[in-house]
Image 1 (spheres, rainbow, N blue to C red):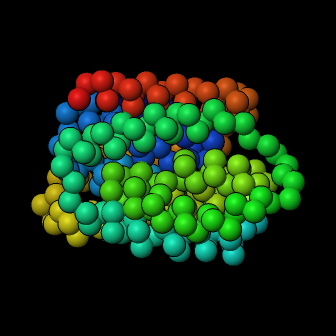
Image 2 (tube, rainbow, N blue to C red):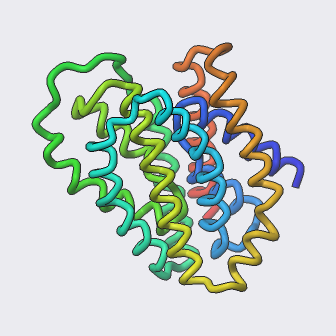
Length: 245
């Protein structure tokens, strides 16, 4: 259990440093440790909420959330996250989707990020079509989806970097809330109690790690180093999960 607490702490610290929640990696760490796959999304989404809630509040207070655009994207994804949480899925399919999403996450983490953007690309008009599948995936396997949304927003020059990070944080928070609601409705009270019993120490670990990551890490390490470190951790866990199936 000690190694799992430490891994959750480090994951939260790294992901919070770059504006994300870490749900996909939490899920994989739990799967590797042998936790029942049916309660993984409940634990991972709870950890997501704890990590990104503080970031979202800070972004809101700083006035960097582009509310109109962020809420329109999130409003499309959230019902799909609820539907994903309600969808039954077998263990093999769950682990395959989770492992693939981790490897893809690692790749998105190393994409270049520009501080300033030119005129938005015409492809921004298609973003509403892309966010619904991201929301569904978020609810299905217990991730926030922001790790996939942010690269799309950067590639389409949707907004500047801080606004995109703020939007991704809000996106993760709302999707995680809707996803966990679906998971709770699907699993019932027994599964929820099992998730609370197994996940409470982990939630405390990510709460501490997330605060340290969002407040301190960027003051000591360049953001590029943190992104590469997060990508290496995520890619390794995803590959281990896929190979071990």
